[in-house]
Length: 480
Image (cartoon, rainbow, N blue to C red; front, side, top):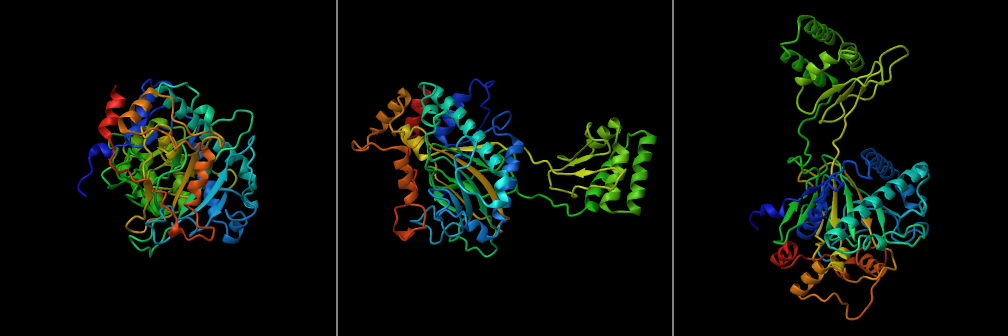
């Protein structure tokens, strides 16, 4: 289909903190032109450590035996609604085109009420249920912030979207769902037939997607009909592809020895310490001995440590925490080098760990928000594919933000929306029929799941093809 225009492939990163006065307009343009936007996750309500914790909980859940997960399956009496575990073969997101169901598992968790989950979780995860609820709450807070900015950009009342997604103290249900996703590695998948998640657009207002470094696969469909990858980290053009693997401490220590040899301007007594380290390393190469000698070399000697760090490859760094005597922390972009070491009494403790980068949060517009804005904001079709080599396991977390169930779907009272609808010939009516947010969601779910008796192949496809997009009209409206 030819090359992809650069404008189609550049999803912006936006800082939505109050310090960025252009955030509202930047968000509106990204939502209108791409349907996807990266939110810089610095200082927001969804904390980096909470994301890592949620991924840890997700991995624990999917590692449970199938018979345990089955007790909370989406088709069980305990789960109810759109909640619970979906095994492989349950979901087919593009039933009109897919020959086989998606190659994935999922665990759908409904919104908590007053901080308490309203559905069962396996006993093995009961203790972390409050942390899941807190994570959902932080995701919802970020969505409300995004809605406030969109309301500002569309020149409507600040709480127009917020009031339709937030029930405050009086509980009113919504279709919002927190979804843990697991795409297993498959060595013998059939290219062109098997897919991790079929082409689809999301049902609700907006979706927050959390990904992990080195686990690509998400693609979006451009107006020209091409599929292009969505980078896990847009600041990393390799899309998180593994660049090098350090399998053992010996290779890791070699990197540090090479750095020492480059540090030729170190004073004689400083170089002597490094030479002692090299000699001792050659005598005993086990992890504990090597790292404990590094503690001796760097602890309480920040000048030497700073000089040494200058000669390490990009992304490597050694730190000596001020609050932990006898501890060094080793950071590297390539993965965990050595397991945490807990040495005996009166001996140095060494921690070797990998600190993943703080990735931006990927946000995309859903069908409801496109409908609400008369098509001005764009719900973009996307899918998850297998890497050519089959890839490793892929984990992701998605928070699907939906309006309150009883909210009527009516056009946003924005001059921009009305102008766009007028120029594109849309009237926003549904032949006089009133539709609530819950009506919309139930119709879409019925076309997706295969847990009942109706064959998925007979259902209407939920995929919304981009078609002939009037980009010039959209640009005119936004530029007015």
